Amino acid sequence: MTTDDKLTIKPGMPLRGTTSVPGDKSISHRAILLGALGNGATEVRGWLAAGDTEATLGAVQALGIQIDRHDTHTLTVHGGTLKKPDQPLDFVNAGTGIRLAAGVMAGQPFESVLDGSYQLRRRPMKRITEPLQAMGAHIESTDGKCPLTIKPAVLKGVRYEMNVASAQVKSALLLAALFADGPTTVVQPGPARDHTERMLSSMGAQIVVEGNDVTLTPGAQLQPMNLTVPGDFSSAAFLIVAALIVPDSDITITGVNLNDTRTGLLDVLLEMGGNIQVTETGLEAGEPIGDLRVQSSQLRGTTVGGDMVVRMIDEFPVLMIAALNAQGETLVHDARELRVKETDRISVMAGELRKLGAQIEEREDGFRIIGQQRLMGAVVDGHDDHRVAMSLAVAGLAAAEMTVVTDARCAGDSFPGFAETLVSLGGGMLPQAVE
Ligand code: S3P
Image (cartoon, rainbow, N blue to C red):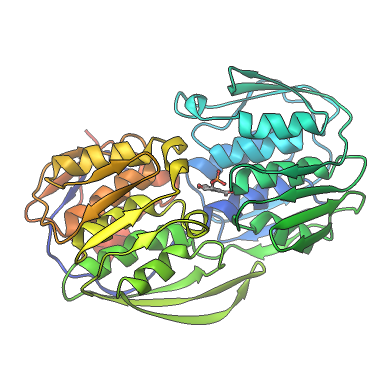
């Protein structure tokens, strides 16, 4: 995790050179949770050691699963039978951790309580409790929020039509389906990230994907995995936008996960005129990976909505920064989900960017930005939301004066070493001790 509580950004310094990004957060959560269900030792390299994933790891250890840490990013998960935890499982800020774990816990023969930070306690859980209850799960929530109390129940296979395109909901159902009495089909409204399907399939689960429908038939014994976690595209996104908007930049990011369900921002930035060259280099953990060369570009505004939204759901805060630097109008719609992330990312980002002098029109399901706005320097607040804090830092790189992002330690929830990476590329980030 970054040790910096605040980031001080000096604008206008070009980013140059080659770097990599930490392991994919979604895959790192799943490597622990699914590894725990495998029949033996799952070996994981390139694991993301960050706030959110450490919370999932701690919860799985509290369920009696032995995890050997060989070094920060290399570990062995000794899969087997889960045991009743002595205390509530604490997922801290990790929405992915708690929602996926709820699916697993619904199928266990013991009671568990799943909880988290003040921030996690604000996030909607009905989206998982309702479908899990439809499978017969016994779950009590606190007004649709966590803590969740999950009691033993007999689960039945169902066909469930999701009303929100969410990989977390889909994954919770597929994991519960492992413990059901018959096949479960999850019908997605759009193509949400598919890491759970890929991983379950690599473990020998009987899983069939037909368009947006995913069917899991329980019964197969899950085999352990041996995987190297690819770099997180969502972390690379901050560096990509930074290089595009700071003049004279030219960077290469190696080993990035290019799974199509995750790279919506790449398509949008290319459409906006971004000079980004993609070189696929192979497969890692069943996911396509590659290198991205990004050079400063004059971007043009665009419109984003429909199925594209779920393919870049975590990238809208940083898209705002690209849009502020683009020529013309950028319009985002169908992105209501942004309001129930770690924070309400539409209103929090708009509010903080206004402190930098930006003009942003908030919409109920998105935003509208007229570009080529030169931001001034200011003190802005990361709101304990990693993607907000890092997006504001990127905004500062192209501002007219120094920007300070306070409450920025949360960058380490997904991108430990964010500031150090920018500094290594020549970006204007002043090292700052914790006060
Ligand atoms: C994630 C899914 C997304 C994303 C989150 C990680 C996952 O959430 O925002 O950061 O790993 O499954 P939703 O599926 O709820 O949109």
